[in-house]
Amino acid sequence: MPDQKYLYIKTFGCQMNVHDSEQIEELLKKEGYQKTDDAKRADLVITNTCSIREKAEHKAYSMLGRFRHLKELNPELIIGVGGCLAQQLGRNLFKKAPYLDLVFGTHNIHLLPEMIQQIKSNKNRIVETLFHESVKSLGIRTLPDNGCVSSYVTIMQGCNNFCSYCVVPYLRGREESRESNDIIDEITFLADHGVREVTLLGQNVNSYGETLPDGSNFPALLKRISDIKGIERIRFTTSHPKDLSDDLIRCYDTINKLCKHIHLPVQSGSDYILKRMNRRYTSEDYIKKVKKLREICPNVSITSDIIVGFPGESDNDFQKTIDLMEKVRFDNAFSFKFSFREGTSVEKLNGNIEDSVKSKRLSMLQSLQEKHSMEINKNLEGSVANILVEGFSKNDQADIMGRTSTNKIVNFTGDIGTVGKIVPVKIIKACTHSLRGKMI
Ligand code: SAH
Ligand code: SF4
Ligand code: F3S
Image 1 (cartoon, rainbow, N blue to C red):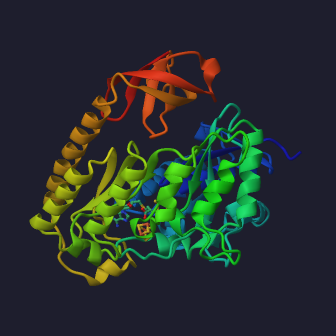
Image 2: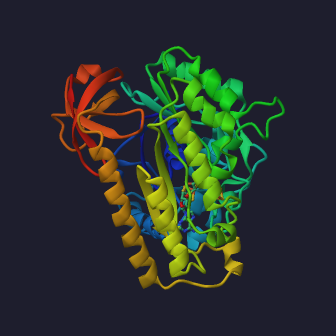
């Protein structure tokens, strides 16, 4: 066993990045690195970055700024930057932070042990941002901390959609699905170690299997996963509305273990803007799919992502987004001001929207969403929901928490011994982003 060393890792961005960090920890555990929450104690510091919006980029820079001083305290410290911003900037990151030792891109996680070894022996900096035909870290198995009931499983990498505003296809590469047998093996392993819920990850899970020769597809994969003993709940994120097939919608009826929630980002309610975004559906297509989903699964919860202030978005286009929200009534929505990203095709479009207009639209949209979330949650008061208990509540350690199948957080007084079990809980009070319950 190698000497005990400490790893401090800070993660920004989406669930995909969170899971990448879990895989990094797993790889480095084998090299003798134990995770620490105290950066001053670390022998190795890694920032796993995101570049989806300018704000995400700035967060990463301010984090890197804090690491400079750590290096002054400990000259032997190795500082690495991974993730989407590392992929984007490569060696240019050294200009921003000359004290960095390592920059590694989204396809090079598997090389970490080797690169760290090289830095130690040669005292040289390393940059590795090459894309490989296949992402070798896809299958690194992580076992969540003891007692953890829910786990991420990456089923595909990359994206082929090229929405005009989005950097992801450039930073994560082309779409690549993992072999279904590998996925099944991993989930069986997780179930054998106490995991009860899996969240399948991919930028567009609906097109799972398109790059595989064996004819696998997403509904068939869901069916196979639902046959795994011990797995009680299956979630997935994200699905692109254009690829939401009738077959997948039917799974909400036929696969009991499939949670009654879908994250289906609409981005805008204006067909003109959707076209400029290269989303390849209209607001009517979207509303029709929501209707079908609700016919098959009346209580399905639907959440979304929405961008305001996309170039060329008039007051009237924005109003169409509000109209769509009124028609659909999302359970929750994440909304963002459009942020220009270098290299994306939106560059060629014009019609920049002033920041003050973006802010006004964002706050209007967010108040409407809060109103809808609250009204939907209020309607649940008095009902009984099955909750998969995850652990102590974040707000109050005297409480425990879990989620409904519809992905709503419920805090309630209960026995920590129920972690990992599905228990019936009466909803007694609604809040905008969570529910208060009572175990029955
Ligand atoms: N693959 C997923 C998520 C991608 S990123 C999907 O297609 O749904 C998450 C969200 O960030 C997107 O849904 C979009 O709403 C937002 N986003 C992406 N690029 C953006 C940009 N340049 N400016 C503002 N928001 C952006
Ligand atoms: Fe980005 Fe569009 Fe791909 Fe999602 S589907 S990652 S928004 S390009
Ligand atoms: Fe960010 Fe990359 Fe995810 S840009 S949102 S970390 S895929």
